[in-house]
Image 1 (cartoon, rainbow, N blue to C red):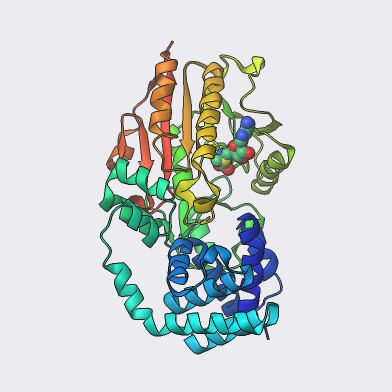
Image 2: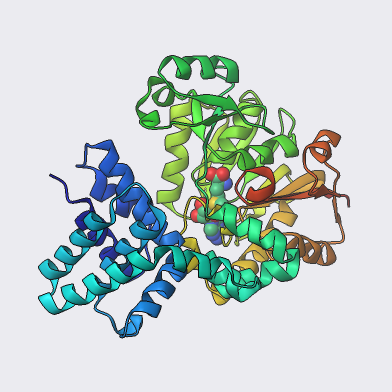
Length: 446
Ligand SMILES: C[S@@+](CC[C@H](N)C(=O)[O-])C[C@H]1O[C@@H](n2cnc3c(N)ncnc32)[C@H](O)[C@@H]1O
């Protein structure tokens, strides 16, 4: 029989060494687990711990005589598993959780530690309701929101300053929620309706995306990648927010299009489908591994209009100066809008590396500005909720590049998004149900 908590412990021990919670770490452990319930419990607990880490550690800290920084790694991780499952998972009996965690500590350390863990988890279990109540009574400010929703304080403070405490609370809550999987119909092979019908016949439960005309939400996506529809390139997995980049840009056929940061090809392949494969699209990224990912998608989707190139977007390519009709900069960014899908982003970002990203974005935008021909367009997007990488970045660009202006979106996008104005939009998971995302549309006028 699988000991799910032992697997969770192994994942945490590995992950907390390097904060690398990439899906692969988890998927590698899950490969041999056939029981879907075990599979789900492991994923739910690991992601749950990563999402709620500050609060879980705060609870442990208040019940442990030893500061958590001084606890043995296995002891701490077993406590995290125990606390998460006791507090957040009503369906699992507490005695089984405590028993398992204690036995794991005994197996991997010693009896003394096992007794310590047993006492803490029993106390937390009997105080469970009081614990929940005492946290629910906290006054809300950016420090308490950072604790309650387990986010780094610097991020919460920034959002509270930019959007206010109430909005920030909803934002944090939705970034901790489970996201829906979205797919984009490859309109060169099928229609959204047809794809929906084909997948429904296979037992999938789907609905149309709210904003994009080619997207579907899949409510039960298990084994979706094994379907013939996926293998034969009828769809691409992509969040609805990303689909909107192409729809808002609205490029024309028979034009030259450059996607400077293209891997794994989500936007480039969408542009090719949108233009019925009738344009010249150059899809670049910085390494051969990344470009390989674009190639795999092009091949699976059977697209002919995209040429891939390994090219560093911070370097100027003289061949393309003043030649490009539509230049897409889907920039490397802090990814704060993706925290629902990748909760480790909470713990992997620092103020310093966000600053470096802002400089990199600005450098790439400057190079991009040289490729676009007069009357051509530059479309800048990020998957983050951070004005410094988004609208402030664009305003700064406009100051340094007076030959560019923001161009208005088609009116229907202003009707769809209350947060869209003057040629840019910030999408929020708590408002729009999408990933946190930013799109700006610029035009070179001189
Ligand atoms: C947000 S992702 C792009 C996602 C892609 N547009 C899509 O829709 O599938 C940002 C990309 O920028 C690439 N990147 C980062 N620095 C770069 C550079 N100096 N030159 C080119 N690409 C770079 C990363 O490798 C990454 O693939």
